[in-house]
Each structure stands twice: as C-alpha cells, then as structure tokens.
Length: 247
Image (tube, rainbow, N blue to C red; front, side):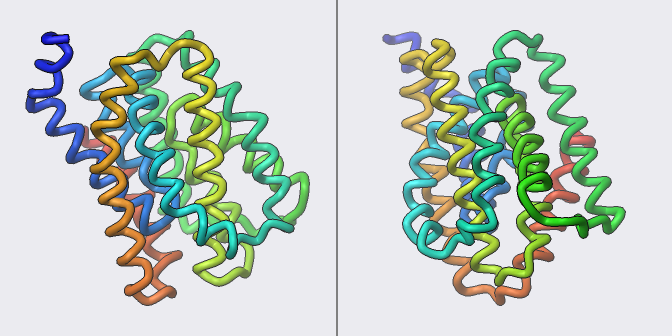
C-alpha cells in the first residue's frame, strides 16, 4: 500500500494528470481526439496496455458527461452500421494488444498517427458511397486500431464528416462512436484481467483531470463558431501526427 501511494506522489503521475487534461479538452471539443493526444504521451510513462486502460477509465466517465446530449442529436439511422462494426472490431483489436511487445505497439501507434496526418495533409476526404459497406469498413478499421492502439479515431471522423450533417450532429455521431469504443476496450481489458486494482485506482484518480478537460472543451465548442469544427478536427490530426514524430 505504501509503495502504491509513493507511485502516485511522483512527477510522472503529475505529468500523466496534465496529459489527461489535454486529452479531455480535445475530446470535449471534438468528441473524439483524446486518445490521439494521450496514448502516445502516456506510453512514455506506462506500458501500452496500462496506458490504454488508464485512458479508458477516465474516458468512460467523460462519455457519461457527453452522451445525454449526443444521444438526442446523433444521426442514428445513417450511423447504425458504423457503430455495429465498431462493436465487433474493437474487442479484436484489444485482444491483439495483450500479446504484443510494448516497443512494437509504441511504433505502431506512431505509424498510425503519421498515416492519419499524411492523409489529412494531402487534403484527401472520403467522397465515395455512403452505406452499409462503407460504414462497416470505416467502423471496422476504427475499432481495430482503437482497440489495439487507442488512436483509431481518425477513421471514424473521416467517415462521419463525409455526411452533410451540421457540425453539432457530426460531433454527436463521433461522441457516440468514441464512447462505444471506450466501453468495449475497457470491458475487454477487464475481462482478460489486464485491469487490476492498482490500475483501476490510478484511472479513477486521473479521471477528474480528463473530465475537467472535457467540460472545458464542451464549453468551448458551444461558444466557438460551429464552422470551425471541421477545420479544427482535421488540423488537430496533422498537429498530433507531427508531434509524435518529433517525440
């Protein structure tokens, strides 16, 4: 017990608290980007499995904050297949994570973020058909990458913003998808025993920072011009991709 408490009274834990505030801020504003902020930085302190578990514990509580409004506003009809694919693919990704070398996982995280950044920097946007096949593809990719590395939000976002919905509806669609992913990852890690008592307690102690950041981010979204949403979301992927390359 004494050793556990001493682990909390360190600069590393303070650093982690700062990371989750930034991640919560991004998640609260965009509805999705928290993992791309937190996961690369948290794996500098914790193992990939522990980092993902800690992020998801706070992410669950943050999703509780964001879900009520999102559920009323989401485009459930068009997003149903996307969410179903996420439900199937996410546990598979999390299962794969448990059997990989941490160094390999860190490299994979960097590669995923770089690919997402290059796609956005090229100006590419999905303009293909929208329907069950496309939704299943993007939902499956997002679920696998999120379950494995916690940074698959870009696949979800690319598909959602291809719909001509308002910024508020797009954000609600993303919040639902991101929250569903977080729930599935947490459940998979808990069932497989990857989330022990010490990780659970650390996650609960970090959660207020993530929730505070999320609350601030949601307030900023309500105050900032809605036309800024899509631009901010796309630029965020580029900035985060560049930052992990530098790190």
